[in-house]
Amino acid sequence: MTAPDARTDPRAFLEHLYRAAVRRALPLHNTAACLPPPPKGRTLVLGAGKAGGAMAHAVEALWPRAAPLSGLVVTRYHHTPARPAGVPERIEVVEAAHPVPDEAGLRAAERILALTRGLTADDLVLCLISGGGSALLTLPAEGLSLADKQRINKDLLNSGANIAEMNCVRKHLSRIKGGRLAAACAPARVVTLTISDVPGDDPSVIASGPTVPDASTCEDALAILQRYRIEVPGAIRTLLEQGALETPKPGDAAFAGQPVHLIATPQQSLEAAAAAARAAGVAAHILSDEMEGESREVGKVHAALARAVAQRGQPFARPCVILSGGETTVTIRPQSEGTPRGRGGRAGEFCLGLAQALQGQPNVWALAADTDGIDGVEDNAGAFVAPDTLARAQGQGMKIDAYLGRNDAYGYFSALGDLLVTGPTHTNVNDFRALLVL
Image (cartoon, one colour):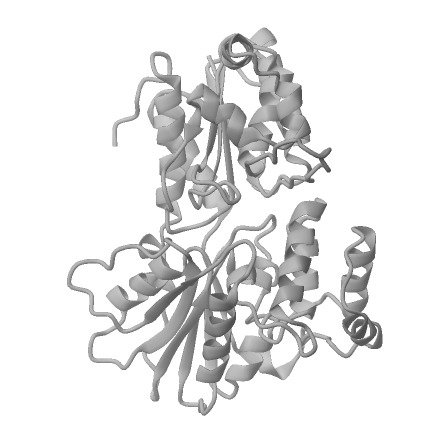
């Protein structure tokens, strides 16, 4: 695909890079090399995540037609793509809520666990795991209700905890995550295909690692709950203190000979975007695929770098694109009564912090977007920042400090016509950020 000219249409050029990154992470492009041969017995497909529907369709398209194949995968509402033409439906795909779990996710998790009963050593289980699986694969620990899990999940999302911390808690409050799904599949062989949406690509963190061992402990989960002042029912706290909700650990025989394949990663997508930029004659530099921290603060750091390049040509020569990925966080600020609730996600809040710190710096454009096509719980993937962003907002009487104060990135960029709306992309390798300096 021919790239738009970065100098005459910076916004279209940045969107072109985003779409190159997303294309690199689509399951159908990455699955074939990781599929094992059909087993002597049956093949059962189980899975959860925002890419679950696309991953299931990829397996259906690639699996030998004569070989038995069945299963169940849960994905987010409206994230099931159209099945490729001529591909028969052999894997059931259901939908549930994300990022806060719902009854549909609970029912799906119960059904997935039930399907593991009666498996034999001749059988193969293909587990399709992608980001979002923690909320979609909801099976609360004994003594914990769905309402409890929903409230704890909301508190974690609003706390500023990073993804590893959130998923440590989730694993210890679940009957299916933290390696428990793989343990339930014994004695069948389990092969996990996963798309990474976490810094470091640790399979035990992706979707709370339902098929891999977990090195974190009940003590770790308690410390995180205490750090972020998140309450759990007294009986559950006691079970955590007693270690009664411990997860299967590394070295457990249940995981012997059970391979895990990373079929798409954030770094691969950033490299695809960089290649697209270079093909268009623009130098590209990847900072990291593992950036974490408060979104607005990460935005300010990116702004400082972009200003140095724009003003002094250091540390990178102009023109260039600066790329980064990872998973930042947003701490929701308490609001006074009567203040409208802010809307937006990590990408939008990054753009607010970036625009505030750039202060209208000439020759700098930016796009931050989530690669699943949904920034938080809104309908946009992310937002654009341009040299005139602040001036246009001020012309409408909009003060960026007020929007940051109520975490309202959506309201700010929507009013400017600067949201990126793509719809679900059917994959998920987390945050994508691109700064163009001309």
